[in-house]
Image (cartoon, rainbow, N blue to C red; front, side):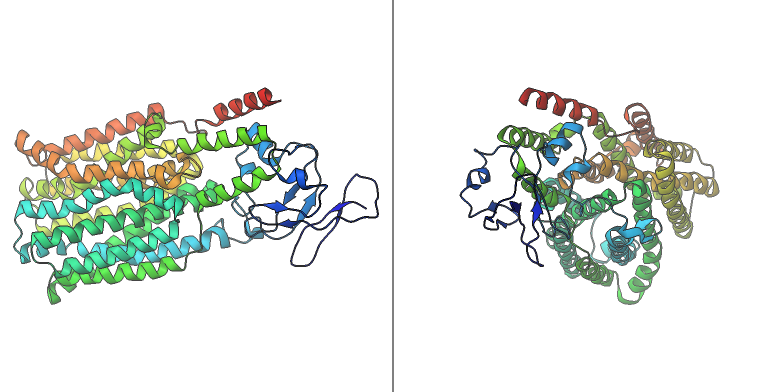
Length: 543
């Protein structure tokens, strides 16, 4: 009886075909991830791409880690799975079972698949919580450190801008490495560089020594944050119905670290001096690196390339040409030039810039306005920021849940409107209590907008190019961090009031809200129908 056999750990399992019985059994073909070979001369021609006929070629699912357990060998006379996926616009048809959203056989934690999403996410959150406790410890020590080594205002500005400059230059190449080398590898490498940079900063006492140390910090952040964004995108792809909840929870955990950290940093700075705080954040970065090492390997871009190679095995020449054209089109969509022609990406860039400018205002014009105009004490300014952080923890988590239930567009628009109203009223506040109410409203808005914008960016990123595509809104934010303090300072100087720049920040948030309201499509990815139509048209031409 003629049969097609496949190698497995348990032996060869014959599968009957429709052909008539025969007494001769052909040699068993050897199947590997990248090729299929056979010692049978009768089937040798079908193993080459040029002589292959799709109606006679068997469809084989290979027993590899990519496809999970089990081996199936079935003779088929139908179009290939990849071809049908291209024809029907089925994204899931272009993914293997290991990369699709699974339910872990019903085993979930808080509605998330336990092994594929919840456990890696818990490791990620635990690692980043330690890191952000260290980052929070640095906040009260920064001005003391600059004072202790005698930095002037301009020199301090150069030192603070150095990481943003490095990130602005390196975000794009780091994003490409995230897709090619791996998410986890870039996260660990970047975090280790951060640890070394902060340790070196604690040793520096001059601007000439500080600038290289802070530039290397920016390089480490480009790698670590690029890997983090892409890894989170891969996780949310496995549970897309909880994308807002996942990003909101991450934001809340990071905010909690920023609440606890300043208490630790202030105590250490008082006892051991401000430079000692940099050793604390260096240790936190090393702990985070160790935590990242426990993460399972996830690389959606690499998995997709392997899947595409496997799927091309049972294609005819015409089908393979069509398949490769579709792959090239998808890869081109992650290019910045292509992304910036899309209205959705423009809104993301504007929203990320507005959020970043609000954070710059938090470090510059808000405390300056509180102290100079309203006569707030350092303790009252500290209370202002603590209140903002606490409200941010609650609004980030709530915003993520609402985004999953109502939609990302609604959360982005409402949160940006809250930012605009909060800062718009803040510049007219008559006392510190009014300012606390206004800044509290702004803090809730910016905390909810952050994870919503991140979730929207993940949702909009072209599959297989997430690392590169997700660097676009991040780079826009880094550019704002670089030039924002200068623009805010010039605005206040030109208008002659410490709170004048609050109107500029408020107007930016309002513009982003209007853009999101007008141009965001909340239903589905913008090119689904266009891709399906193009695929059907090309298949008809081939046939």
